[in-house]
Image (cartoon, rainbow over all chains, first blue to last red; front, side):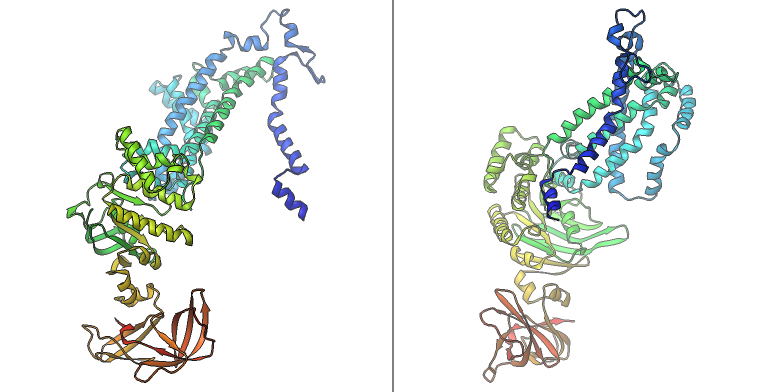
Length: 286
Length: 349
């Protein structure tokens, strides 16, 4: 009994907990290893544990461009796709925030008739298959001339991201009492001052988390982008799907896959620092 | 220095009546407590004075001018919330300076007033700390400083002592009183705790169910409650129904009691007699003849350190007596209760 309490007090991990953590880490990082190896391989056939021939060894001899040479060359369109992806993701996140902040405020604080139905309606895009949404949107967008345009895709991406964002921000707003805004009001702050000096900074961790999530969802949407981009707008997912649709995961596909994961990882690292930085503590009295 | 006046103020939320009708007059520089059980409408009243709620009917006047339509930002009031509502992402100085910086005052003036205010609340040493790094008393001082720096015409507080421990309560009480006197600022605070109300206020407004039950000095509210409800809320233990048999005599289950006559009470009226537990003189010997005394037996004893509370059985009735703990009388002992007529207070039914 005493030993157990010691463990809890010193907050050291038991051997079981350590193995468990390692397993989870392996589960997350593991799939990347073959990708990295694959992208660097020239020939990697079963049952070899490591590639028989590496990319570098063939570089001078090969007539066609090899994996990374191809991925980083203009022929792969990867820069265009990456820029499109990040631009679309950023625009979607910004618009999503502007739409969802006021909505979440109302959902968190007010009670009105049909609120339950409204919340259900908001989560509908998560239930309806993306293909159905995409088809319907495409028909409308072709009429409106939005098909194959940047903003057509942005609008399409808002549909599956808004439900997530509203939910996240509603939860954050529920945690933020009315007191702070009322106090700011009594101290003489105007609505815009309250929003930028009190509300947004206090909601920041939730807003950052919601924005990160929205961005990641947007950068990963394939079907809607594929339908509405009509091949005119390439993003990283559509590029990747075009590459692997034949069913083979060759070295250049592995390279593209690795590039596709980059925006998310970079963003995660930035936001994590951002959230931790400020001394957000209890400070709410009591 | 602002005089606050509520006249026939009513507040409804949909079909729910929060404030039935309240008239209240707070003199300039006065410290008034709004006292009542939770849900009685006292916080709503405070929020209406602050401008966070708009009255359904009636007028709120500051120095005779109706402010019911003046938005919160322009009303120039101050409010200290129960949980202080310090902005957690700002340091103490930025919290305190908030009211001035949103008004766009020049930096130099903000600095000067900030320094002065931090000096007043003795928080100079904590100016770069975040609220999460402060104790409860310090947080409250920051909240008060943040409010006072805007020079409000009326200061409002929601349960100012409720979140503090006993030792801090006394300190904060003296601090609030001293500040209030120093700035001469009209102050209104809300509480559900009658001790807190009596400790701090010049006058106490007792509110029940959205109506003003009594508005008087703490002493009079405690000793001379206007109604049974007020008496019970102020913790009165000994209330006996009875009938006035003469202008200064009341027939109760405790026996015939001599009392101070009260204007407007006719002989034959059914009234209640209230005896404050600490106003009764308890003796172990029969008192000299001519004194009004009731014989009884001690049925229970509760020791509170500085005071002792006895339950004394007198015939069919139980009387609660509170004494200094200078002596201890054992349970079962025979005692006499000496009741001075001026300590028998009559309450209309």
